[in-house]
Length: 120
Image 1 (cartoon, rainbow, N blue to C red):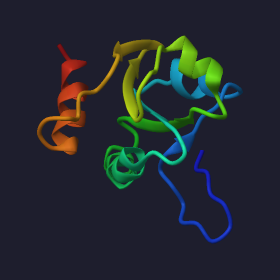
Image 2 (cartoon, rainbow, N blue to C red):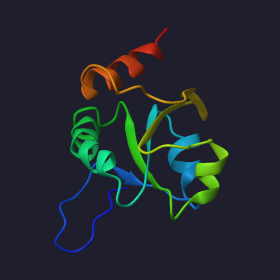
Image 3 (cartoon, one colour):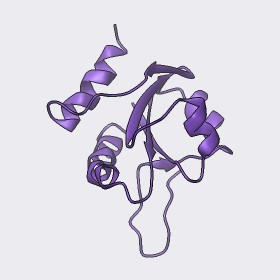
Image 4 (cartoon, one colour):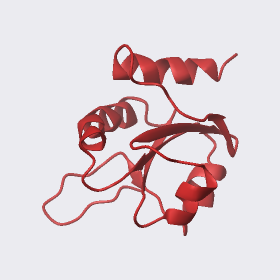
């Protein structure tokens, strides 16, 4: 499910909220990178193009979804999100990596390392 608004390019990232969280994340056959973000967050804006690239390149192998803090406080609270952006990796309906550390090294390598950790 791609989400777009008029004059916006199609996105490989799925917008998730409480109404579709279970279907898109918990019941997903592939691993899911969940981007917890908030409006006005500069780091959130900075990683957005990289997440789009990952979503496009790994389509069918990994799903990337975004959850807006203001619109989904229940999900933010349920997963203990305190800072933004927070990236979590879900597999088989469970949190496999609670917070992908992208503070060191390249963002891309951090994502790929987190995904590789699922295979062990």
